[in-house]
Picture 1: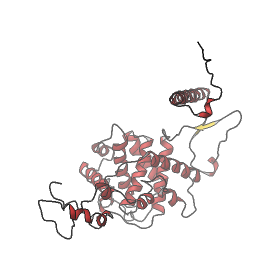
Picture 2 (picture 1 turned 135 degrees about the vertical axis):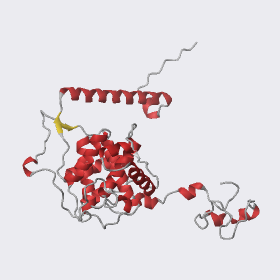
Picture 3 (picture 1 turned 180 degrees about the horizontal axis):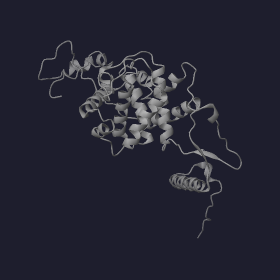
Picture 4 (picture 1 turned 90 degrees about the vertical axis):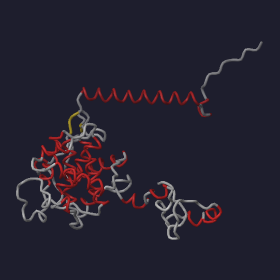
Length: 335
């Protein structure tokens, strides 16, 4: 910051100011500019200036793993769950002694189709049970349309159906060849935007908010990110300048916080599975085949051998008194 202290001073924010007044009087700071009485003479440490409020962080589910996700709370507000299956197709498979049913979705490799359906369902509950209609002009579809088709007059009143949200997200993911993990990160960024910007996702802005979250998540998560011009090939009528401006506003509203901890990612994945169970949106179950059973057994043996090697190396470094029983000792030879 050069030789000036006044540009970094933040008076009245640190409890260390009063504690160090005596020290500062004994060792005055020499600067190139005059320090006014309003700014004081204490240079606050960077850790005190940039440390986030712990209570505010715990209240934000996109930053803290212990905070409950917003979409799960929204889905439980009215107590009425959305059924994604017809009553005739509603059947749950159970494992038996002869057949074991497993789904191919894990926290490290989620099922793409099921994850997109769950993310679309979470956005559906966000719109349906929103608190108000707070929005920004950059996300308004009337002011920044995604297509040349005329926007209906009731575009800001009618809530979109789950199928419409799912088709919109599925089109982007299939065209850009995005992964299921990217869909989970998209939901994290979406809820972080709603919390940081204090806005709501509603019928007039949901498409552009989802598009901005997908655009940012694909660049952060995937090694080979999709460029903004590539999305203009998917959405024919949108311009690159519009995409760049929306991405810039999205990042500014997120305060450039694009970090997604592993604990937060896992929380969103399991909350999406809970949302699927509550709404009869089951992940596809397949009977355990011989080939897959052998593969799982091989992975289990590999992990078991790895842990055995780690335990052996730990025993070589130190041995507790409990493990001394049964250790063979050599007889001493007296000469």
